[in-house]
Image (cartoon, rainbow, N blue to C red; front, side, top):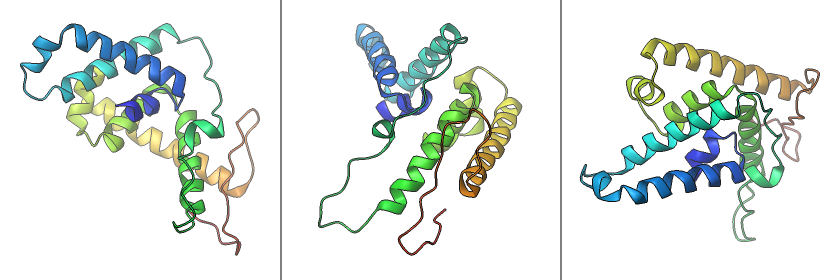
Length: 175
C-alpha cells in the first residue's frame, strides 16, 4: 500500500506516508465494518484513492516538489548480486517521468498498470467514466513516451527537471 501511495503522490515519501497513515487510521476506526466484507484490501485501496483525490483538491494550487534520488532508488544490492545499474537507471527514469504527469493521469496509470485494475475498476475508483480513463491513459502514455524520448536525446524543455538516461559502461543505451 505504501508503494501505491508513493505512486499516487508522485513518489514523495513523506506525503505518501502521511496519506497512508491517514487512511490506515480511518480504516482502524471502522475495522469491524470493513472486515465483514471479506477481503478488506480493495476497500482500503478505495479509501487510499479517495484520500489521495481529497489531497489533490486541497493542494491544487501548490506545485509539486522535484524528486530526490534517495526517494526513488531501491537500496543497492550486496556484492554477491549481479550489476543492476541499468535496471535502477530505467526505474529512476520512469519514476521521474511519472512524477511529471498531472495528478489525474498519474493516478490512472498507477491504478491501471501498477495495481493492475481494469478500466471499469479504475473509473469506479476515480469516480469518472471508462471513456475518461481511456483518454487519460492514452494522454499519459503519450506524455511519458515524450518525456523518455527527451531524456534519451539529452535535450530538456525549459524549466523541466533534469532527467538523464544512463548508459552501460560500453556506451549502449538501455531503454
